[in-house]
Length: 495
Picture 1 (cartoon, rainbow, N blue to C red):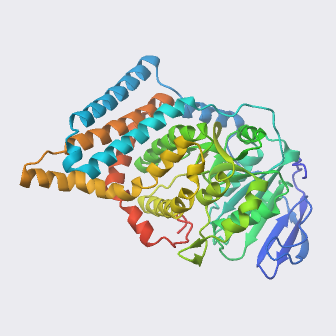
Picture 2 (cartoon, one colour):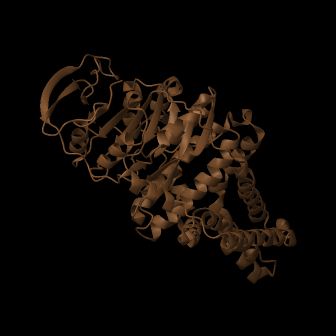
Picture 3 (cartoon, rainbow, N blue to C red):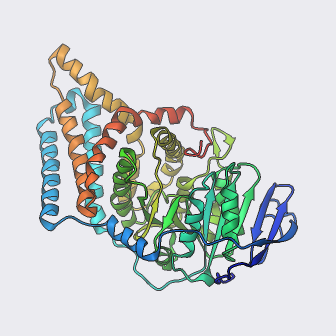
């Protein structure tokens, strides 16, 4: 790999462009050896060179500003308030357990709702009991070669900062390369990438003339990479200093195939929706992924910031890239499917000390599309993973088989608990489990939202209740639309 050396102002740099006529893609490099053949069809490139003016350095937060941002993200409340928060959460949970035991008779006339509530409660509580056992991978001063893959479509406003933040993350320059893939953008994304290329010899820019989908944007980076490890970063994700090095430390163990970093929401202060997502992100990482990491079975390495052992990806790349849904090939491969292909034979971990922030959807329409794509991904994977998960540690195996059906039956349970049960009470005079069910929902929401407040000091913890309400009334039902449109192939948030 080349060395990302500082460059002088008012100079030109030579860009080498390698074009594949068959695949209609171009690879641009500056200072690193150009590839000789297309990674897809293996045919020789048509190569050209040109001198271009060196671009001006991009404006992005300084190291001091970034550290201040990191400190602000985890500003915990006073000890007395933290103890009060914990006490309230424990009290609510104990009350919910008591109500479940008191209304045990409900199991006879509302078995679906009662059994589901019991299993869901056990599942969530178990996450909170296992998560404290989590320990982040230790720093072993492990500095292997790595390639940072940045797939991108229509992100001209942020892609330059994403690139600059990777290069300023403090990882050894002679062991780092960044591969940015422009997936047929229709805005100025490619121009922003090319400007960054004039400043960073360790940057490789791949341009798809037409949109080919996220999986191909990742795959071409995997094939072009010359490193031992791959770090996947979304085009709107900003890495904090030291996070690349920290993310590599768990790979000292040769049985580890992938590691997830930790992402908070960069634009959490924008509106109610982004605050709600920040609370939800924290729970999904610090509780769910932390608990899964204890047994090395993290079920999804998010595309926003995760790392893979490249040899593991190459081993499953063909299967992943040529995934079928309903017997048809398509652009179905994503972060969850890649994770599960590797999880079958390797450990997958989570490192909560490898920090980054990512831009979350700011409009409800964008958020709905994102959740629909995630639901499709979930449905495509549950059957595949269910065939072999039983071979793993019994705790994550039991959790998986319980969790795999919960989102599918949950809308039915919600309807039975909040609509059917009250009608039965009114017409037949049978017991009413509405209050017991709702108390359980509220108690669990209190526990994870207050845990968020106690750990971060961010006062909009209450927006977690907005998440619960929106999920119960709308997003839980989206699973059925995802099932009906399971062959959908769009990026999701990019339309």
